[in-house]
Length: 214
Length: 369
Image (cartoon, rainbow over the protein chains, first blue to last red):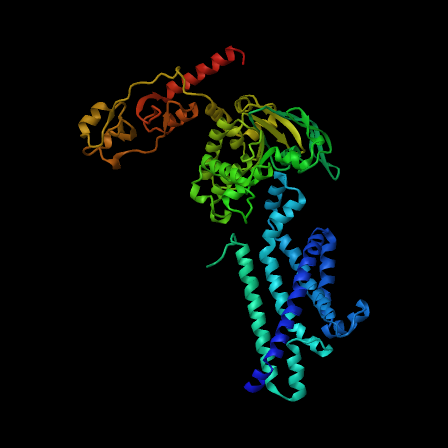
């Protein structure tokens, strides 16, 4: 560990950290926003549900580097544009969360839905006040996986020149210098652990009704 | 009043309900009962259009339901289901308040209504802020009933409301619900597969047969004494002769004899002097009967361990079924009748009791009913 380097480059490291945070969190937020309506539609699509979910899941197997390189062609963006990374990661988030949302809605007890219908809930009110709240524990689980996997995948974007903590790895490799690599790993882990804990705490706050083994 | 007029439901060519004509009178509890597959639940669910009828008309107080908006229709009708179907993410009070909120009542007033109703269905207010999983099955069911009542609907539908709890809890819920219904007088249709529940709760019982056809609509007593056909007779069950006594009161034609009772600790000789046909009744200080003692078996003063506890006691406000059971279960052959507070009133011998029943039968048939 070269502490002098660390002190000298601190501003740069902080900047990379914030970029990393932004690049991994923004796609999760956008992805969740899209996955809720899509997951809801898929869950209600009857016999198409299985095939659609399998297809969406397959998106996750597209190599990230390929996406980073190909997206500028489709989006008309510059190769260095961070938008490419955000769109690519949003696709991965969708691959995870569409299934999660559908599963979460599926997990709502039938009797609960039947009771809501019989009481005269209209579909939208039922979705917003009964189904979605009850799906929170399942959705939050998927959200945690999406966040952590994003934080890891983002670093690959250093290879196409989008700056974030991954840039510390390419830098360390070029300079044959270990300190940036170690710092990059430590900060990535820290980021993942913090965001994961944040989602966990938030989802528990939102589900005081959940039965927990204390 | 809820009325079915020629209502039919066909699933994939198979009729589930066939040409149902039935009126559930205002303020009364109508029970739909029948074996599984008889279409009773389908009939119930057609009322609030959870299931759409294939043909026919259902009216609420004369107003056809097919002209109403579905959500509006459902909000006018309280609905109670088997496993209560409570919202797991809402507290007990919030669950109950749901229907009031749907009816447009503001949050504060809805909570007040909810708390009042919880008390009414016999739940301590300490449970108001618990979540459903923290409640027993019986408690959840009470919350389900309270929730259906919170919008103060004129009509209620109940789908096997008491069948998911154990028999002791079920009997208590039934008794409490009967008491509640006497106060609130809702127009109710209830579905059950349990004929005893139907006879106990129903003002009117509609028996349906497999294939969705109505077999008979009658009062519980009429169902027991005059089943329309062999299907109804079979369904109502084997002990119907005995069970219909459950609808007959212990009236003035029951002539009781005075029965001497002794206290625990009475010497054997004194007990023997009070005994009739070798058996003496033992009561507590307040005069409430405890059990019978056979004086021939006494070896000293009457002890608690000498008591024969086999007999049931009928209270004066009870039914002939309870009285007959009291006589049949009594080792002395004398059925014990108490005042409503449990104090001994007198006894009647089994033979006298049967004779009275026979007299009632002849006088009833003499009136031509």
